[in-house]
Length: 337
Ligand code: GYE
Image (cartoon, rainbow, N blue to C red; front, side, top):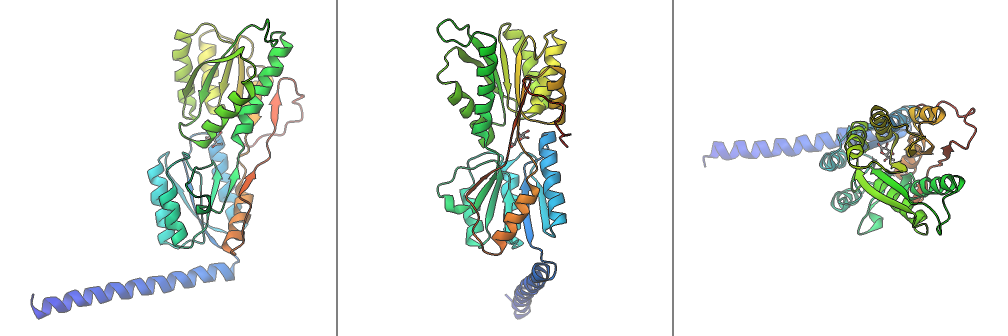
């Protein structure tokens, strides 16, 4: 190589190193400015997408709370792909955010990226859905829903409903045939809701799940699946749907087929969107289990504590309630999602 060539390579390398140093300095100044000046921190947040009204409310809550609490939010929408979430988290690490928050679309497959965050000294807050890790120290804590309990609540309602109908006694109880439309496969919420539901029905063999299928938390799939199932099954007593979006599609398919949801078939659903509460009031749904999406303010305060180097609780479940046809629904406030 000519001398001139070597000089230009050396110059290019020097330039790159300087550029990196300058960028780092500017970045750390803005960063410190943001931290001390406005009392703010930088939170990189990976959301899974916008599959349901519940999810849109969850995103809105996070964005609004960030604004109100002076947190600079780097928000990334993964469009339902785990690989997009991992890419976003890697870019948050490169950007040296103070804290990373994310909603894990599925429970498995996070160890490597969590290790990268840990090596970079960035604490990670898991929100909404839980994860399985080899080592729980790979993330700082979790805030979100108790999906096992939601599944149990769905079962408790059925036990009450069918006891009132007079066929819960196992000895002479008629079979109660259940179709379950579950959430995204491999997500902690679908796994938890299914597990809690089965656990609470374990001692009641007359309750049998005759079909279980994932509708991916999508209204369109709820509709499509129920349309197909109505060609196959003519006798079943219950539909347990893992979210309201799918339930609304299921109700459409039933009405089209001349079935009266809530009367001919008992409908139990999770989330408590306004549309589901309205359907409960109309008698088309029998029980709605609340899942609370408004976690933005809690996420911001946990992120701030983590940025200060504080420890946070390992597990925080949000408050959730149950609305059923046995309740006085006149005082249920507008849901906001
Ligand atoms: O039930 C559903 C959704 O992860 C708890 O995701 C959440 C679920 C929620 O889109 O509607």
